[in-house]
Image (cartoon, rainbow, N blue to C red):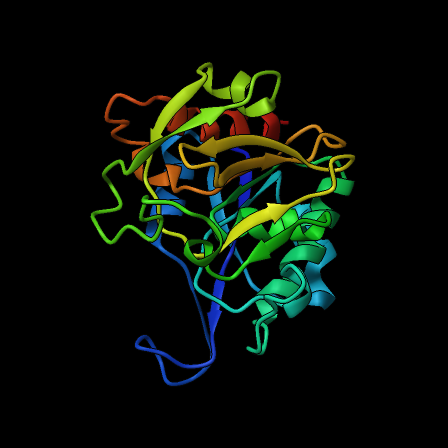
Length: 241
């Protein structure tokens, strides 16, 4: 059987520790996770002229996390940012919509989930700890391969079907958070113990699933939480021709 090709959108920096010149980069864990469940990972650059060709070449899309500035209009009124948005933000929203419109699955992780939400009308806050009264440190600086808290998974969602559980332990590494969403377009699938949104999906499509945590760290060793690996297995199943 031919392995399904899963495109992984690369992150971008104008300059950084890797190179003083513009470059693409993304953590190896995403590629390892796709490979571990039988997929063939493929890194995708930002290229409007070749987007259609890239979409034709892949069977599914993984939108990873990343540390980059988002457009001001993605935030609720009064909390807009003053940073120049990363080119990834504009490109990723177009890419997600285009992939879904041709019937291919999308799994969006952390920042990727926020982008997918924004593509369908969600609004965020730039600092959840200034917005929520919570004692949970969502920007947890501990080892990402450990669990920080549990999330409640909403029944009758794709996430519930995929994971087969109503609650699971997750890691965390985010400062921003989705706080508003159009209920006719977006379904909230998971929330943390303090009510911070941890999962969303777009019900108009067969597989448009986003999670705020980083399941890629638990694909090879699930640490007693198989739901993380099941997310990637579900993506591969939907992407298999």
